Length: 299
Image 1: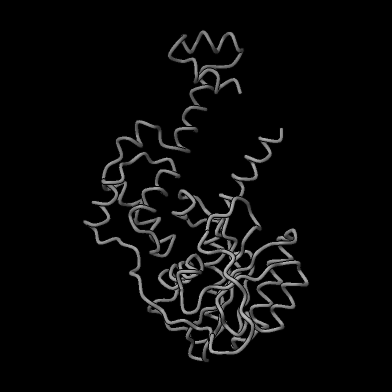
Image 2: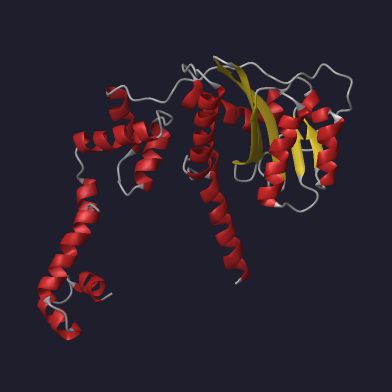
């Protein structure tokens, strides 16, 4: 665009001269510059942002993510939005104004491993960093309390991007719940055969129905050691994030209200929430970056 070229050369040649050479009006160029300035603060403006202005941005983001970000994610989010501020400044300002992430809580396990069903070997062995999408998924079940009774959520989490690729929610914790989550993930991703699905030893996963579904999709079962939640740490971390962000301290009158809240958070988590393990990008962005890199290599 001619105006952008003039902007890039305005410190080299007089604006009036460049405008004449490009056959555009100087007034038109200045109007364009005003519009650009209105759209986005200049670098000088961002560097000189006052604490009051920065606090407005922090509070807006804090409300937008519903109190989920502490200062490290807040700092990364500000950078992603074009505000060049120091992390120590963000930390001190949030502390001064009592802006903090929701506190962590411990939650009890839901699945029952006291059974005599066959148990698969632990093929993952805490290797939570596969090299590509659809290489290893993990799954687990969590619970949500409502005035109408319990609600159970099962997910399939792709370890590569930490994206929730399948989920199911129901009032009963059955094998059908985890099969529905698996079915959704398969339809969305269509992975090649040999994908590993890592779970705990709950009866829903060890049962013949779920194992039959895995085989039908050409997938391989892997299971944590008995009573060791660290063997499925990424999914446990997902539950902690969900419950801190949207469930802790809330009382849902209906299962439908709880389901809507969970679905809203899952959409936010996949597309927007900055993930520390991924270098502070969202799961979907991490996967897009990987795909772009693969295309560049093959070009």
